[in-house]
Structures are given as C-alpha cells and as structure tokens.
Image (cartoon, rainbow, N blue to C red):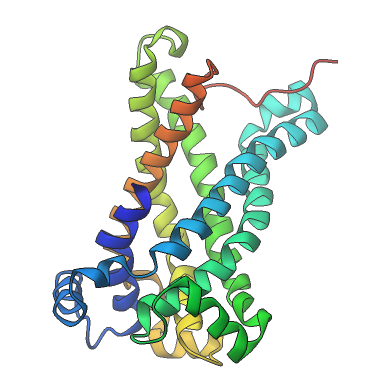
Length: 280
C-alpha cells in the first residue's frame, strides 16, 4: 500500500520536477504532463525496484536499529543510556542506515532511470542488466555516497525525533500514562509523531535527495555538476513541498505498521522509555 502511494502520487512527478524544471514547472503541471505523455501506467513505472529496494532497506533499517540501540545501550550502561538516550538513538539509526543503503542502492539506481528516462527500460527485469552492461556492476552503486548523504541524516532525524516527540507527547500533552492508554490510542500517537518526524526528515535530506536523482539520471555527472545546474537554493527547495507530504505520510504509516506488529506480539509500542540494557 505504501509503495503504491509512493509511486502513484509522489515519486514520479517529484523526481521529474527535480530533473527537468523547465518542462515540469510545478507539482500540478508535473502530474498533468506525466498523465498526458505516459497515461495512467506512467504513475506505476518503477514499482518493482521500489518494492524490492525499500523492502530490503526497511528490513535492515528497522531490524538493525533495534540491534544497535540495544548494543550501544549495553556499552553505555543503564545510567548513561538513560542520560544520553538521544545520542544512542542517533548512533543506532545511523549504523543501521549505513547497512540498509547498501541493499537499497542498486534498486534505487534502476528505479530512478526507469522513472526519469522515457524508453530506458520497461521495468526491473531489463533495466538492471542494461545498467550493468553499460556501466558494470559498480554503476549500480555510483549513487551510494549521495544516498548515504540523504538517508543517514534522514534516518537519524526520523528515529531520534520520533522517539523524543512521542515521549514528550505522553509527558506533556497526555495526562494519562502511556501504559494506561489503549493500544489504538498509542498507535494514533505513533502516527502523529511519525508524521511530524517525517516532515523534519524531508527538510534535512532534501539536498541529498536532489543529488541522488541528478546523478542517477545523468551519466558521468558529478556533485559539482549538480550544484552548478540546480544551484544551492534549488538543492534545498526543488520538489520540497511534495516531498514533505510524501515523507510525512510515509513515515507516519511506517511507524503505525511497525508498532502494530509490536502490539500483535504483545510488545510495548515505540517511544516513551529509555533504551533497554541487558541485566547484569
């Protein structure tokens, strides 16, 4: 469901706006041009690498976040883990995302080419070997460093801000202790906290997102080329309003799904507590 929302409503016109601002002058015109030129099927382009890439990234990101959060908390000990919990959230999420992006990068490269270069490939099955044949296997990873530059700050903001927003919500805005709130109410708090965290993520990671789109779409291009063409202001603002809507909705929904799984297994929902440490 999230992948469909990503592809249909946001991802295609957002990337096209980033790549060709002369043709796609605004968000609304971007949808219109895409629909006129490619029809409804244009909004589904790149669904396979989106599904596979972000599924793998999500598995590594959320799984390793819990691992590293626990690992760093054990190293710090109970007292320092509670005192410096935000630093643990930041370190754990950065470590997890570093690994997750290695899994995401090849699919991201294929997805961007399919969505921004008409006629490049029908989908993943012919797009992936076409890149490998033309640029070698390393061609799938030429956007890895900008991807780290986009996703690591994004994920650090995503996890640390979410954990703190939820904790402050229960502490200052809700008179009832979290443990006494219904599970459905806690999931509502998770969505609201996730949406706000997503807005912050979009703002922090927007420049690197523009770089990733530009580099994957322009053969042989460098970061300097992207800065010269887009400008510093363009790196920060081009496509930002739509990305805020996309990332806010996506992040809020991710946290609801994530915490719903925890509820299903009778585990506490995320937020409102210091990182757990091993008993000695």
